[in-house]
Length: 595
Image 1: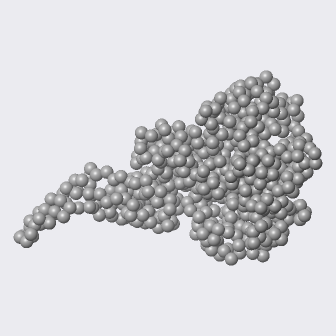
Image 2: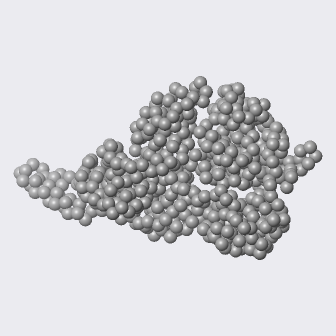
Image 3: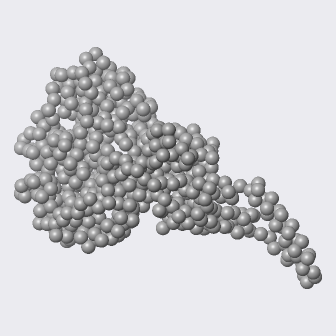
């Protein structure tokens, strides 16, 4: 155990952690020149295209230092604010963390929140200044920021570059010297923490774990404590570029276990594995069920695909423990699922993965958050979906979730960012200058106001410089109304939204205008209305496509033309009563991107 080091990488999105991880793999010869490709740990096409890490990966490296052979277990983590739960799981399995800061951008909000997580778990922090080869690097300024933030000695900050390989040796040396080896007793009862799971269609689920105490052999009978189920360890091993089987693993090791598990619910991330014959007394603490922030309905385009969609969602859940879903039905869209996501990026990625990996065409409804409704009888109802709102006469008041938002930006954008937050019903809590031109602004905002397009707006206002992080603080009373969209007088429940009364009129008008552009013209006139309860607040009309019935009248009496037009009018009226309006997929998505 003296020669094992478990560490993770903490960084904001796009600060170069995947590239630096590549260099570490090359240096320790875990990766040969032939196998090398950029961002080797980002295995999904989606991750490579967007240049982001979505799923954390673990890999073992071997490195000889001063004549001794060391095993280094790297657990790579995502950098986007939506995936902070993935990061917390990786941190719980480590003893040290590389804090990577981009020398051209300085410290960002997500770095700070993940850093606090690491400090809470008592990890040894090694600060690394990346992208030192860039002409726009500001090493001295950024070093000041790091020293202010974690109070480390200035000379302990390692200068590095993922592109040129500068500083890689110092990083490996720092990991060996500064990170303490895992504590644990190989002879104690077996106790291991699951920090991730991956689904393989041939072998079932690979559960990735870190052994805290004890030893495990192939074919041991093990028990998963949260579910209480027992399995044989068909194969155990360590994670290199490919899984490599081993006969025995002991305390401090990071590895995988295959036990023929086929269903997702049986592997809970954060669960503890132990032996059936000699179990440990308590499960490992510090893990919680993930809390979804944003809810949206996902429906199959073709109603017959409902069962396929369920199977696809279950498989996705195997690879992404933070996806939560339950069945629901809608009058307009039929049967589907109400899904909980960590944020809008997470939602977009789930949609992309359903399309690419499972070939599922889906319709996504307007995202919203969960509200607490207090009825006149004194009951509290959780509402995830606008159609689940009780009648207005039964509602005493509605509470909505609030968040504490931290925004770090350059000082020149402060005014615009404050305007954006105040427009979103935010309250300024604090403003402090980190350096002469970097400001940290703290706002209290309703969560429902940021799930829509807040992050995109923030990025465009600040030209990509502002970084944003948030955590939920509780609930507050709100003046919310349900805005319904009616087509030909019939409500389309998938387009309903719970919205603050002050924004309802404007939002309703914009939706009607957008739908008018997107719904194809029919043989009859279609009325699009936005209504609160029985009161219509906005209306647009799609004119009918009609045949020129008077073309054959040449000259003659006006009554002939009128008779033909009246006949056509009656037909259109009858058509309108039986007519059914198909809403294209683009219309549901357009509501998300109203501007």
